[in-house]
Amino acid sequence: MAASENDRVGSVETRGIEPVPDAERHGHASQMFWTWFAANISILGLPLGAALVSFRGLNIWQAAVVAILGSFGSFALVGALSIAGKRGGAPALTLSRAVFGVRGNAGPTLVTWMSRLGWETINTTTAAFALLALLDAAFGIRRNTVLTVVCLLVFIGCTLLISGLGHATIMWINRWASYVFGLLNLVVIGFLATTVDWGKVFHTQVGPVSSMVVGVGMIAAGTGIGWANTGADYARYLPRRIPGGRLVAASAFGAGIPLVVLISLGSLLAAGEPDLASASDPVSAINTMLPSWMSIPYLIAAFGGLLLSNHLSVYSAGLTMITLGIRVRRTLAVGLDVVVTFAGGIYFILIAKDFYGPFITFLTLLAVPINAWVGVFAVDLILRRSYDGAALMDVGRSSRYWFRGGVAWAAMIAWAAAIVVGLLFTEASTSATDVWFSGPLAHSWIGSNGLGWVVTLVLAAAVYALLRRLDGTVREEASAQPPQQQVLPAPAARELS
Image (tube, rainbow, N blue to C red):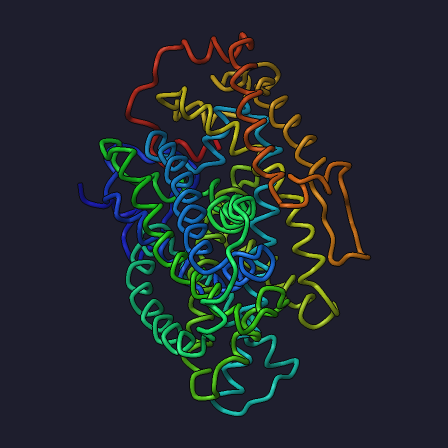
Protein backbone atom coordinates (compact mmCIF):
# COMPACT_ATOMS: atom_id res chain seq x y z
CA MET A 1 0.00 0.00 0.00
CA ALA A 2 1.40 3.42 -0.92
CA ALA A 3 2.41 5.90 1.73
CA SER A 4 0.11 8.83 2.40
CA GLU A 5 1.14 12.46 1.91
CA ASN A 6 1.47 12.60 5.71
CA ASP A 7 4.24 9.98 5.72
CA ARG A 8 6.58 10.64 2.80
CA VAL A 9 10.34 11.02 2.87
CA GLY A 10 11.32 14.68 3.05
CA SER A 11 7.86 15.94 4.03
CA VAL A 12 6.85 16.93 7.54
CA GLU A 13 4.78 14.30 9.33
CA THR A 14 1.72 16.12 10.67
CA ARG A 15 0.22 13.17 12.53
CA GLY A 16 0.66 13.29 16.29
CA ILE A 17 -0.34 10.50 18.65
CA GLU A 18 -3.68 9.73 16.96
CA PRO A 19 -3.87 6.17 15.58
CA VAL A 20 -2.92 5.63 11.94
CA PRO A 21 -5.94 4.59 9.81
CA ASP A 22 -5.67 1.33 7.87
CA ALA A 23 -5.74 3.26 4.59
CA GLU A 24 -2.45 4.95 5.52
CA ARG A 25 -0.64 1.81 6.71
CA HIS A 26 2.32 0.75 4.59
CA GLY A 27 5.82 -0.72 4.76
CA HIS A 28 7.44 -4.02 5.67
CA ALA A 29 8.80 -5.67 8.81
CA SER A 30 12.33 -5.00 7.51
CA GLN A 31 11.86 -1.37 8.58
CA MET A 32 12.26 -2.55 12.17
CA PHE A 33 15.55 -4.21 11.21
CA TRP A 34 17.01 -0.93 9.97
CA THR A 35 15.53 1.05 12.86
CA TRP A 36 17.36 -0.98 15.48
CA PHE A 37 20.48 -1.59 13.40
CA ALA A 38 20.91 2.18 13.11
CA ALA A 39 20.33 2.71 16.83
CA ASN A 40 23.07 0.25 17.78
CA ILE A 41 25.98 0.76 15.37
CA SER A 42 27.60 3.27 17.70
CA ILE A 43 31.13 2.38 18.76
CA LEU A 44 29.93 3.00 22.31
CA GLY A 45 28.96 -0.67 22.49
CA LEU A 46 32.63 -1.49 23.11
CA PRO A 47 32.64 -0.60 26.84
CA LEU A 48 29.79 -3.06 27.43
CA GLY A 49 31.95 -5.89 26.15
CA ALA A 50 34.94 -4.65 28.12
CA ALA A 51 32.86 -4.77 31.30
CA LEU A 52 32.10 -8.47 30.76
CA VAL A 53 35.83 -9.26 30.96
CA SER A 54 37.05 -6.61 33.41
CA PHE A 55 34.16 -6.75 35.91
CA ARG A 56 32.61 -10.18 35.38
CA GLY A 57 35.72 -12.24 34.72
CA LEU A 58 34.47 -13.88 31.53
CA ASN A 59 36.66 -15.08 28.68
CA ILE A 60 36.02 -14.08 25.07
CA TRP A 61 33.90 -17.13 24.23
CA GLN A 62 31.67 -16.65 27.25
CA ALA A 63 31.39 -12.94 26.46
CA ALA A 64 30.29 -13.75 22.91
CA VAL A 65 27.56 -16.10 24.18
CA VAL A 66 26.41 -13.48 26.69
CA ALA A 67 26.36 -10.82 23.95
CA ILE A 68 24.18 -13.02 21.73
CA LEU A 69 21.70 -13.87 24.47
CA GLY A 70 21.52 -10.37 25.95
CA SER A 71 21.33 -8.45 22.67
CA PHE A 72 19.08 -10.71 20.63
CA GLY A 73 16.90 -11.53 23.63
CA SER A 74 16.31 -7.96 24.79
CA PHE A 75 15.50 -6.70 21.30
CA ALA A 76 13.21 -9.66 20.70
CA LEU A 77 11.25 -8.17 23.61
CA VAL A 78 11.34 -4.76 21.90
CA GLY A 79 9.97 -6.41 18.74
CA ALA A 80 7.27 -8.22 20.70
CA LEU A 81 6.07 -5.02 22.36
CA SER A 82 6.10 -3.24 18.99
CA ILE A 83 3.25 -5.57 17.95
CA ALA A 84 1.03 -3.24 19.97
CA GLY A 85 1.88 -0.44 17.54
CA LYS A 86 0.87 -2.57 14.57
CA ARG A 87 -2.41 -3.48 16.25
CA GLY A 88 -3.37 -0.07 17.58
CA GLY A 89 -1.57 2.27 15.18
CA ALA A 90 -0.49 4.58 18.01
CA PRO A 91 2.71 5.26 20.01
CA ALA A 92 3.53 2.98 22.92
CA LEU A 93 2.68 5.38 25.73
CA THR A 94 -0.58 6.38 24.02
CA LEU A 95 -1.57 2.72 23.79
CA SER A 96 -0.65 2.49 27.46
CA ARG A 97 -3.81 4.49 28.21
CA ALA A 98 -5.75 1.30 27.46
CA VAL A 99 -3.76 -0.47 30.18
CA PHE A 100 -3.43 2.12 32.97
CA GLY A 101 -6.44 4.33 32.25
CA VAL A 102 -6.40 7.79 30.72
CA ARG A 103 -5.36 9.36 34.04
CA GLY A 104 -3.34 6.53 35.53
CA ASN A 105 -1.14 6.50 32.45
CA ALA A 106 0.30 9.90 33.42
CA GLY A 107 2.79 8.30 35.83
CA PRO A 108 4.49 5.91 33.38
CA THR A 109 4.37 8.58 30.67
CA LEU A 110 6.08 11.22 32.83
CA VAL A 111 8.83 8.80 33.89
CA THR A 112 9.42 7.77 30.28
CA TRP A 113 9.63 11.38 29.09
CA MET A 114 12.13 12.28 31.83
CA SER A 115 14.26 9.26 31.01
CA ARG A 116 14.25 10.08 27.28
CA LEU A 117 15.33 13.66 27.99
CA GLY A 118 18.11 12.38 30.21
CA TRP A 119 19.61 10.00 27.68
CA GLU A 120 19.26 12.60 24.94
CA THR A 121 21.27 15.03 27.05
CA ILE A 122 24.00 12.42 27.46
CA ASN A 123 23.96 11.72 23.71
CA THR A 124 24.13 15.45 22.94
CA THR A 125 27.02 16.21 25.26
CA THR A 126 28.99 13.12 24.20
CA ALA A 127 28.47 13.99 20.52
CA ALA A 128 29.64 17.55 21.16
CA PHE A 129 32.83 16.19 22.74
CA ALA A 130 33.32 13.93 19.71
CA LEU A 131 32.86 16.85 17.31
CA LEU A 132 35.27 19.03 19.30
CA ALA A 133 37.85 16.24 19.18
CA LEU A 134 37.25 15.85 15.43
CA LEU A 135 37.86 19.55 14.77
CA ASP A 136 41.06 19.35 16.80
CA ALA A 137 42.31 16.22 15.02
CA ALA A 138 41.39 17.36 11.51
CA PHE A 139 42.09 21.12 11.63
CA GLY A 140 43.94 21.77 14.87
CA ILE A 141 41.09 23.95 16.18
CA ARG A 142 41.22 23.96 19.95
CA ARG A 143 38.17 23.79 22.17
CA ASN A 144 36.71 27.02 23.54
CA THR A 145 33.33 28.16 24.87
CA VAL A 146 31.98 29.49 21.57
CA LEU A 147 33.09 26.41 19.65
CA THR A 148 31.52 24.16 22.29
CA VAL A 149 28.16 25.91 21.87
CA VAL A 150 28.47 25.65 18.07
CA CYS A 151 29.15 21.92 18.30
CA LEU A 152 26.11 21.45 20.52
CA LEU A 153 23.99 23.42 18.05
CA VAL A 154 25.25 21.34 15.10
CA PHE A 155 24.22 18.10 16.78
CA ILE A 156 20.92 19.57 17.97
CA GLY A 157 20.23 20.92 14.48
CA CYS A 158 20.85 17.55 12.83
CA THR A 159 18.63 15.85 15.37
CA LEU A 160 15.85 18.43 14.94
CA LEU A 161 15.94 18.16 11.15
CA ILE A 162 15.54 14.38 11.09
CA SER A 163 13.16 14.00 14.05
CA GLY A 164 11.13 17.03 12.98
CA LEU A 165 10.47 15.65 9.51
CA GLY A 166 9.16 12.50 11.15
CA HIS A 167 8.55 8.81 10.61
CA ALA A 168 9.14 8.34 6.87
CA THR A 169 12.37 10.36 6.84
CA ILE A 170 13.63 8.54 9.93
CA MET A 171 12.99 5.16 8.28
CA TRP A 172 14.84 6.26 5.13
CA ILE A 173 17.76 7.80 7.04
CA ASN A 174 18.10 4.71 9.23
CA ARG A 175 18.61 2.45 6.24
CA TRP A 176 21.07 4.49 4.22
CA ALA A 177 23.00 5.95 7.16
CA SER A 178 23.45 2.41 8.46
CA TYR A 179 25.45 1.62 5.33
CA VAL A 180 27.62 4.74 5.63
CA PHE A 181 28.31 4.73 9.35
CA GLY A 182 28.31 0.95 9.46
CA LEU A 183 31.16 0.94 6.94
CA LEU A 184 33.07 3.56 8.94
CA ASN A 185 32.61 1.46 12.06
CA LEU A 186 33.92 -1.61 10.24
CA VAL A 187 37.07 0.30 9.27
CA VAL A 188 37.64 1.35 12.88
CA ILE A 189 36.76 -2.11 14.19
CA GLY A 190 39.20 -3.68 11.74
CA PHE A 191 42.02 -1.50 13.00
CA LEU A 192 41.13 -2.01 16.67
CA ALA A 193 41.14 -5.77 16.10
CA THR A 194 44.82 -5.52 15.10
CA THR A 195 45.64 -3.99 18.50
CA VAL A 196 44.21 -6.91 20.48
CA ASP A 197 46.62 -8.71 22.78
CA TRP A 198 45.76 -12.21 21.54
CA GLY A 199 48.13 -13.86 24.01
CA LYS A 200 46.16 -12.51 26.95
CA VAL A 201 42.85 -13.25 25.23
CA PHE A 202 43.57 -16.95 24.80
CA HIS A 203 44.96 -17.30 28.30
CA THR A 204 41.98 -15.72 30.05
CA GLN A 205 40.47 -18.15 32.53
CA VAL A 206 36.89 -19.37 32.19
CA GLY A 207 34.53 -17.38 34.41
CA PRO A 208 31.72 -18.82 36.55
CA VAL A 209 28.34 -19.58 34.99
CA SER A 210 26.73 -17.21 37.51
CA SER A 211 28.75 -14.37 35.97
CA MET A 212 27.38 -15.30 32.55
CA VAL A 213 23.83 -15.09 33.89
CA VAL A 214 24.55 -11.68 35.37
CA GLY A 215 26.27 -10.64 32.14
CA VAL A 216 23.19 -11.46 30.08
CA GLY A 217 21.13 -9.26 32.38
CA MET A 218 23.69 -6.47 32.19
CA ILE A 219 23.74 -6.49 28.38
CA ALA A 220 19.94 -6.67 28.16
CA ALA A 221 19.55 -3.77 30.61
CA GLY A 222 22.11 -1.69 28.73
CA THR A 223 20.64 -2.30 25.29
CA GLY A 224 17.11 -3.50 24.46
CA ILE A 225 15.36 -2.86 27.77
CA GLY A 226 16.00 0.86 27.41
CA TRP A 227 14.13 0.87 24.07
CA ALA A 228 11.29 -1.47 25.08
CA ASN A 229 8.74 1.32 25.47
CA THR A 230 9.44 2.84 22.03
CA GLY A 231 9.07 -0.09 19.61
CA ALA A 232 5.40 0.62 18.93
CA ASP A 233 6.27 4.20 17.91
CA TYR A 234 7.97 2.89 14.76
CA ALA A 235 5.63 -0.02 14.02
CA ARG A 236 2.41 2.02 14.03
CA TYR A 237 2.47 2.69 10.28
CA LEU A 238 2.87 -0.99 9.42
CA PRO A 239 -0.15 -2.92 8.05
CA ARG A 240 -1.99 -5.11 10.52
CA ARG A 241 -1.48 -8.15 8.29
CA ILE A 242 2.26 -8.33 8.97
CA PRO A 243 2.90 -11.32 11.28
CA GLY A 244 4.10 -10.33 14.72
CA GLY A 245 6.86 -12.91 14.53
CA ARG A 246 8.48 -10.95 11.71
CA LEU A 247 8.63 -7.85 13.86
CA VAL A 248 10.28 -9.83 16.64
CA ALA A 249 12.85 -11.35 14.28
CA ALA A 250 13.57 -8.08 12.46
CA SER A 251 14.13 -6.21 15.74
CA ALA A 252 16.28 -8.95 17.28
CA PHE A 253 18.54 -9.36 14.24
CA GLY A 254 18.65 -5.63 13.45
CA ALA A 255 20.08 -4.78 16.86
CA GLY A 256 21.73 -8.11 17.62
CA ILE A 257 24.12 -8.18 14.65
CA PRO A 258 25.95 -4.89 15.35
CA LEU A 259 25.78 -5.31 19.12
CA VAL A 260 27.34 -8.79 19.11
CA VAL A 261 30.18 -7.56 16.91
CA LEU A 262 30.85 -4.49 19.07
CA ILE A 263 30.45 -6.23 22.43
CA SER A 264 32.70 -9.09 21.36
CA LEU A 265 35.37 -6.64 20.18
CA GLY A 266 35.09 -4.76 23.48
CA SER A 267 35.73 -8.04 25.25
CA LEU A 268 38.85 -8.59 23.16
CA LEU A 269 40.17 -5.09 23.79
CA ALA A 270 39.66 -5.39 27.55
CA ALA A 271 42.43 -7.99 27.70
CA GLY A 272 44.96 -5.24 26.99
CA GLU A 273 42.95 -2.19 28.09
CA PRO A 274 41.03 -3.10 31.27
CA ASP A 275 40.37 0.59 32.02
CA LEU A 276 38.07 0.82 28.98
CA ALA A 277 35.22 -0.67 31.00
CA SER A 278 35.30 2.09 33.60
CA ALA A 279 36.00 5.09 31.36
CA SER A 280 33.71 8.03 32.16
CA ASP A 281 34.08 9.25 28.56
CA PRO A 282 34.27 6.13 26.36
CA VAL A 283 34.61 8.18 23.15
CA SER A 284 37.87 9.71 24.38
CA ALA A 285 39.06 6.45 25.92
CA ILE A 286 38.76 4.61 22.62
CA ASN A 287 40.23 7.54 20.70
CA THR A 288 43.44 7.32 22.73
CA MET A 289 43.87 3.74 21.48
CA LEU A 290 44.03 4.93 17.86
CA PRO A 291 46.77 6.68 15.87
CA SER A 292 46.03 10.27 14.84
CA TRP A 293 45.22 9.33 11.23
CA MET A 294 42.55 6.87 12.41
CA SER A 295 40.95 9.37 14.80
CA ILE A 296 39.07 11.19 12.04
CA PRO A 297 37.02 8.23 10.69
CA TYR A 298 36.53 7.02 14.26
CA LEU A 299 35.15 10.35 15.51
CA ILE A 300 32.90 10.70 12.44
CA ALA A 301 31.56 7.21 13.13
CA ALA A 302 31.05 8.03 16.82
CA PHE A 303 29.20 11.27 15.97
CA GLY A 304 27.02 9.51 13.39
CA GLY A 305 26.17 6.62 15.69
CA LEU A 306 25.08 9.00 18.44
CA LEU A 307 22.97 10.96 15.96
CA LEU A 308 21.19 7.84 14.67
CA SER A 309 20.32 6.84 18.21
CA ASN A 310 19.36 10.35 19.31
CA HIS A 311 16.89 11.16 16.54
CA LEU A 312 14.92 8.03 17.43
CA SER A 313 14.85 9.02 21.08
CA VAL A 314 13.80 12.61 20.33
CA TYR A 315 11.02 11.45 17.99
CA SER A 316 9.62 9.17 20.70
CA ALA A 317 10.04 11.84 23.36
CA GLY A 318 7.95 14.25 21.29
CA LEU A 319 5.12 11.72 21.06
CA THR A 320 5.43 11.00 24.78
CA MET A 321 5.20 14.73 25.56
CA ILE A 322 1.92 14.99 23.64
CA THR A 323 0.57 11.87 25.39
CA LEU A 324 1.39 13.55 28.70
CA GLY A 325 -1.16 16.24 27.83
CA ILE A 326 0.96 19.04 26.37
CA ARG A 327 -1.27 20.13 23.49
CA VAL A 328 1.15 21.06 20.76
CA ARG A 329 1.87 19.78 17.27
CA ARG A 330 4.36 16.94 17.00
CA THR A 331 6.96 19.16 15.34
CA LEU A 332 6.75 21.71 18.15
CA ALA A 333 7.01 18.92 20.73
CA VAL A 334 10.24 17.78 19.07
CA GLY A 335 11.49 21.37 19.09
CA LEU A 336 10.74 21.80 22.80
CA ASP A 337 12.52 18.54 23.50
CA VAL A 338 15.76 19.54 21.80
CA VAL A 339 15.68 22.97 23.48
CA VAL A 340 15.68 21.23 26.85
CA THR A 341 18.53 18.91 25.85
CA PHE A 342 20.51 21.87 24.47
CA ALA A 343 20.14 23.69 27.78
CA GLY A 344 21.21 20.53 29.59
CA GLY A 345 24.23 20.20 27.32
CA ILE A 346 25.26 23.80 28.00
CA TYR A 347 25.01 23.26 31.74
CA PHE A 348 26.82 19.95 31.86
CA ILE A 349 29.67 20.90 29.53
CA LEU A 350 30.31 24.51 30.52
CA ILE A 351 29.12 24.73 34.14
CA ALA A 352 29.00 21.37 35.90
CA LYS A 353 32.34 19.84 36.86
CA ASP A 354 31.10 16.27 36.72
CA PHE A 355 27.83 15.22 35.17
CA TYR A 356 28.16 11.69 33.81
CA GLY A 357 28.20 10.03 37.23
CA PRO A 358 25.35 11.95 38.90
CA PHE A 359 23.20 12.03 35.78
CA ILE A 360 23.50 8.33 34.99
CA THR A 361 22.79 7.63 38.68
CA PHE A 362 19.53 9.55 38.36
CA LEU A 363 18.61 7.66 35.18
CA THR A 364 19.34 4.36 36.95
CA LEU A 365 16.55 5.16 39.40
CA LEU A 366 14.14 6.02 36.56
CA ALA A 367 14.85 2.62 34.99
CA VAL A 368 13.00 0.90 37.83
CA PRO A 369 9.49 2.26 37.02
CA ILE A 370 10.17 1.81 33.29
CA ASN A 371 10.88 -1.91 33.80
CA ALA A 372 7.74 -2.18 35.90
CA TRP A 373 5.76 -0.65 33.01
CA VAL A 374 7.25 -3.18 30.58
CA GLY A 375 6.05 -6.07 32.76
CA VAL A 376 2.48 -4.75 32.99
CA PHE A 377 2.24 -3.74 29.34
CA ALA A 378 3.60 -7.09 28.13
CA VAL A 379 0.94 -9.06 30.00
CA ASP A 380 -1.82 -6.80 28.65
CA LEU A 381 -0.46 -7.22 25.11
CA ILE A 382 -0.62 -11.00 25.42
CA LEU A 383 -4.25 -10.88 26.57
CA ARG A 384 -5.48 -8.02 24.36
CA ARG A 385 -6.39 -8.32 20.67
CA SER A 386 -7.43 -4.78 19.73
CA TYR A 387 -7.43 -1.12 20.75
CA ASP A 388 -10.25 1.41 20.45
CA GLY A 389 -8.71 4.33 18.54
CA ALA A 390 -11.36 6.87 19.52
CA ALA A 391 -11.15 5.88 23.19
CA LEU A 392 -7.36 6.31 23.18
CA MET A 393 -7.86 9.96 22.21
CA ASP A 394 -10.78 10.59 24.59
CA VAL A 395 -9.38 11.51 28.01
CA GLY A 396 -12.78 12.27 29.54
CA ARG A 397 -15.28 10.18 31.50
CA SER A 398 -16.88 8.95 28.29
CA SER A 399 -13.70 7.07 27.32
CA ARG A 400 -13.78 3.31 27.21
CA TYR A 401 -10.46 3.52 29.07
CA TRP A 402 -11.77 5.61 31.95
CA PHE A 403 -12.08 2.50 34.16
CA ARG A 404 -12.56 3.77 37.73
CA GLY A 405 -11.79 7.47 38.16
CA GLY A 406 -9.63 7.42 35.05
CA VAL A 407 -7.37 4.73 36.53
CA ALA A 408 -7.08 0.98 35.88
CA TRP A 409 -6.20 0.05 39.44
CA ALA A 410 -5.02 -3.46 38.64
CA ALA A 411 -2.26 -2.01 36.45
CA MET A 412 -1.43 0.84 38.83
CA ILE A 413 -1.12 -1.40 41.88
CA ALA A 414 1.08 -3.87 40.00
CA TRP A 415 3.24 -1.03 38.68
CA ALA A 416 3.63 0.60 42.11
CA ALA A 417 4.33 -2.69 43.92
CA ALA A 418 7.02 -3.63 41.40
CA ILE A 419 8.66 -0.20 41.76
CA VAL A 420 8.84 -0.55 45.55
CA VAL A 421 10.34 -4.04 45.36
CA GLY A 422 12.69 -3.05 42.54
CA LEU A 423 14.06 -0.16 44.61
CA LEU A 424 14.85 -2.59 47.43
CA PHE A 425 17.48 -4.16 45.15
CA THR A 426 18.74 -0.86 43.71
CA GLU A 427 21.79 1.18 44.63
CA ALA A 428 22.38 4.49 42.90
CA SER A 429 25.84 5.93 43.45
CA THR A 430 28.61 7.77 41.64
CA SER A 431 31.33 6.07 43.71
CA ALA A 432 31.80 3.88 46.76
CA THR A 433 31.67 6.97 48.98
CA ASP A 434 28.96 8.94 47.11
CA VAL A 435 25.81 6.84 47.48
CA TRP A 436 22.57 8.59 46.57
CA PHE A 437 20.23 5.75 47.36
CA SER A 438 20.70 2.21 48.57
CA GLY A 439 17.86 -0.25 49.04
CA PRO A 440 18.07 -2.73 51.95
CA LEU A 441 18.60 -5.61 49.49
CA ALA A 442 21.01 -3.74 47.22
CA HIS A 443 23.94 -5.84 48.43
CA SER A 444 22.21 -9.19 48.10
CA TRP A 445 23.32 -11.44 45.23
CA ILE A 446 20.52 -10.11 43.04
CA GLY A 447 21.17 -6.49 43.90
CA SER A 448 24.95 -6.51 43.72
CA ASN A 449 24.84 -8.26 40.35
CA GLY A 450 22.46 -5.73 38.83
CA LEU A 451 19.50 -8.07 38.42
CA GLY A 452 16.97 -5.95 40.27
CA TRP A 453 15.45 -4.95 36.92
CA VAL A 454 14.58 -8.61 36.27
CA VAL A 455 12.78 -8.87 39.61
CA THR A 456 10.94 -5.62 38.87
CA LEU A 457 9.75 -6.73 35.43
CA VAL A 458 8.72 -10.25 36.47
CA LEU A 459 6.93 -9.10 39.61
CA ALA A 460 4.99 -6.41 37.73
CA ALA A 461 3.88 -8.98 35.16
CA ALA A 462 2.86 -11.55 37.79
CA VAL A 463 0.95 -9.14 40.01
CA TYR A 464 -0.88 -7.59 37.06
CA ALA A 465 -1.80 -11.01 35.63
CA LEU A 466 -3.40 -11.85 39.00
CA LEU A 467 -5.13 -8.52 39.69
CA ARG A 468 -6.40 -8.18 36.12
CA ARG A 469 -8.68 -11.17 36.69
CA LEU A 470 -10.08 -9.56 39.86
CA ASP A 471 -10.66 -6.04 38.52
CA GLY A 472 -14.26 -5.73 37.34
CA THR A 473 -13.65 -2.58 35.29
CA VAL A 474 -10.87 -4.31 33.34
CA ARG A 475 -13.05 -7.35 32.69
CA GLU A 476 -15.86 -5.07 31.51
CA GLU A 477 -13.55 -3.24 29.09
CA ALA A 478 -12.14 -6.51 27.77
CA SER A 479 -15.62 -7.90 27.08
CA ALA A 480 -16.81 -4.79 25.22
CA GLN A 481 -17.48 -4.96 21.50
CA PRO A 482 -14.23 -4.76 19.51
CA PRO A 483 -13.74 -1.37 17.81
CA GLN A 484 -14.00 -0.84 14.11
CA GLN A 485 -10.75 -1.40 12.22
CA GLN A 486 -10.85 2.11 10.73
CA VAL A 487 -9.93 4.78 13.29
CA LEU A 488 -10.30 8.53 13.40
CA PRO A 489 -8.59 10.58 10.73
CA ALA A 490 -5.82 12.87 11.95
CA PRO A 491 -7.74 16.21 12.19
CA ALA A 492 -10.70 14.74 14.09
CA ALA A 493 -8.48 12.81 16.46
CA ARG A 494 -6.36 15.88 17.14
CA GLU A 495 -9.45 17.68 18.43
CA LEU A 496 -9.94 14.95 21.04
CA SER A 497 -6.30 14.94 22.11
